[in-house]
Image (cartoon, rainbow, N blue to C red):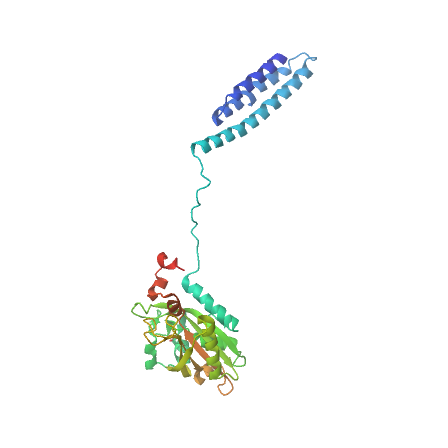
Length: 345
Ligand code: DAH
């Protein structure tokens, strides 16, 4: 029996030394270590041995079992190792090659520009108020002092929404948010308000280099007990300084139904510094925003007593501003989703 076990061990280990693939290894395991394998067969014979021979034979049988099992485990590792070195040799890996570039996402230029504008207004104490993109005719026009059939409505080429009476629309400007901000934050005309209202606006336009059917606006509104036109000029001038650097701004009279008086603000051309060029159409200035003192009717519609409260408002087109800053020639690029455009930012 001792001889048989010793021979079995030698034979098994000898065979194992030639094995280098998983299939043969499994076959080997079944042959020697399997339930009906050679070792199991030898072990069943132990019972038939004379009593005095049994302990030594049993001990040896155990040693053989442990030796074969650990040789088997070691072989698994050795086969893996050999497969790895073979594949490394046949497909050499050049660790000095430059890596493949990873495609990284980034902010859309319109959003990056919006965030810059938010940052400036936030630093100046304005909070962001998000209003809705679908509006009622009442808030978008009537509350802003633009009654039904008023010719000023033509300034806002409006998309109407699934409503034959034209009472629901896609907002063509962010100004209706002024009414909502005053009503939600003003606590029935008892609290001051200082907000910007950014967001997408829609207009029924023939899309062109200068006009698109969608664009962002950033509206601003400040309501308080003693706000004057000097506050409007000072605040907007400071915004222009933070956004465009030290350069002159100019205000001139304009008209909007929801402000009185109304003013347009221009900033000195960022390309020619006032000398005159194609960008500023040889005027030396660029139009940046519309503004004005909130009309008493609008204050009243927001819940304020116009004898006690006053305020200023403004509205700007951030894509327009980005076009000036980066020399973008066509406003339609913003929503065209052309990566060649987007990746430049
Ligand atoms: N809502 C105007 C527009 O869409 C822009 C504007 C002008 C907003 C004057 C204002 C303002 O708040 O005071 O063209």
